[in-house]
Length: 484
Image 1 (cartoon, helix red, strand yellow):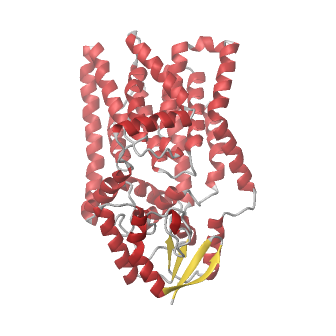
Image 2 (image 1 turned 90 degrees about the vertical axis):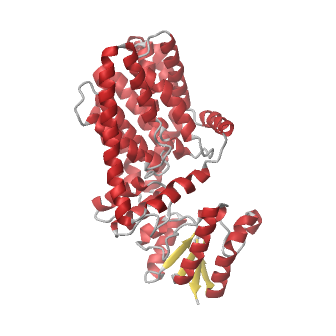
Image 3 (image 1 turned 30 degrees about the vertical axis):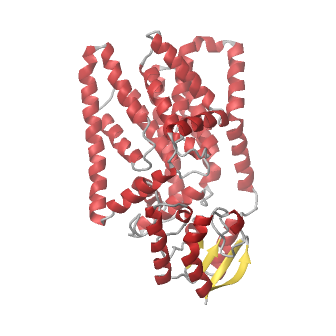
């Protein structure tokens, strides 16, 4: 079964392995990773609002590829294979190959459902949860297993703070399990102490980095204060978002069914460790993944480990022997079709795009810059960080994308002032407006749909552009402003 899992992973991932464009967020993380490899400091030499660990992961991938983006894709693929296979091996110890294999396949299809071009915070967070799960479910555990689980908690927290639902759920499940058997209390204490030590090792390592680079204050302001400005929803709004997300993404049916089964098992005093884990984990994950209320597909990649364990719990509840029944097999086939027709279609589409010669506007823009502006310094106005990555250029200022102009807070006010000062001091040869719809275009053509506060925020910058640059040309939906 393991070789079939690897084959399925390769089938799903192959089109991405040859595409280094990345999505909008993935391109930002790749850019920040490349800055690290050049001796630059995140949050100081390049602004983004995710945790330090996502940039360290991308830097490691960048080095694997000998400072080429393919290394990040290789790292993604390696983590994908390692995490899924390790969890498969742990599940198959207590369940059959049929159960373990089906659960992993459901997980892979769920990953594809939410993948969004990959290299995302939630993607890496999900892989580390799979690895932690595999260590928890091992029959024979060694001294390092719970150290690694604690270490991965800090890594996920410093990738993005809402990627940690598994760990409090694990703590509660491990805490409750010994209550049924006093002999297990000592085991729980040992597990907890080891997790704490693992977490302290990770915290200590990151603390050393922040002390050496004098960047902790910047990290805290950007990764926590700024990032959580996106999550200002009330509890009632988050509950509405949970309802919307479970209705929009039909894979939630599997998760909800397993949650109901777990509750029933607990009431009947039949719940084992996995059921206890899901009782705490599912509500926590639904809450944390819906904090922003934006319903973007990749926000729900963290559902993937839950889907795998949910399938195991569902199989176990109905007993494997009943799955030989033809009616149940038909039901499973229908479930796969209803829940996973989208990832299957997406995989086929990605292969079609891989073999076509059609280029996106971003790729055309990259080719044009490499041809005409290869010796010019640039600043991309808008959110197309892939242009920097694929041209191997770097913005002349830390603010290589500019979504903060849309927000109103004391911190963004300081950032906007700093942006203006820095671009005056380090003005690029060319400003390329890629026409990001949510930002005011430099030619003002979309001002009717832009909020007044953003227009006011942009007045000093637009004044600088108008006084020092002229529109030289427009190509592939991008405008090129050249310095006078």
